Image (cartoon, rainbow, N blue to C red; front, side, top):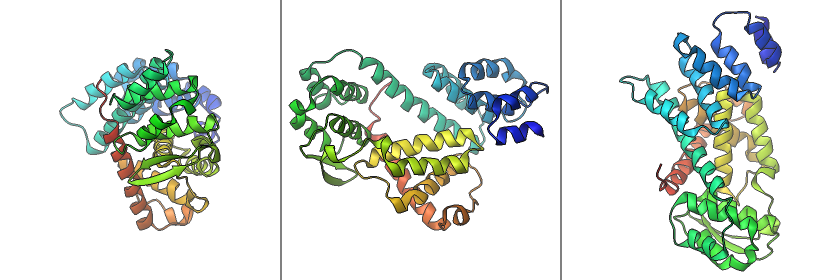
Length: 313
């Protein structure tokens, strides 16, 4: 079909024009809208056709939830997912998809709320209090966001106490390290992460998303998952979380394929997709090594989830 060829080439606007000449084909239409970043139109379109969906329901629902996230409509997304999860029977593969989407909404809402609260200017004493005396994840994120407003050198001792506490979020620790880097702090600080202790010289590091090997790993995922935008979006989220959990460790030049393959494997397993992908021909890796490294990444994500699970909604 002509619209399929156009979608494969990334010509979503042209493909959508052809799709609108046909009834149904809802998944294809909503895929085009999502890829065009027309998130408000994805939302309104889904709500207008939801009662007509006879196939691809959960795939279309996935784009709807992801679009609600892009529009910061977290509570609406949670209401929809709660309704789906309350159904008496959900197939195992879709149960995993819904659970994964639910966790994603919670995480995005968590950071959004923290960013909203961080717009109020905090005093140095308030920052110290939120970091050291308050266990709430959102409050800690609020304090870390406020570091942009002060000279972080004035509270390096307090920041090091936070950085060396193994009960604190690894991702939030990376946010602190990034701010130390941005303010060109040349004094070394100790960091405890993933059962390892590091002495970090912030001035010697780049922000996480500027790391060359991170960018190349992201490109590998895009090349391999570009035909499935919902899986690609999930892979991006997982990669982002992983690099922040591991920082100041970074992806090495010879590890790009391993990280991309393991994340792809993990995304497939979450969605009960076919795991017989030929990892050897695309990534030059055997399936057993991909599976083993995927389990390692999964354990990092689970540990981080426990560290940041004290927020109540």
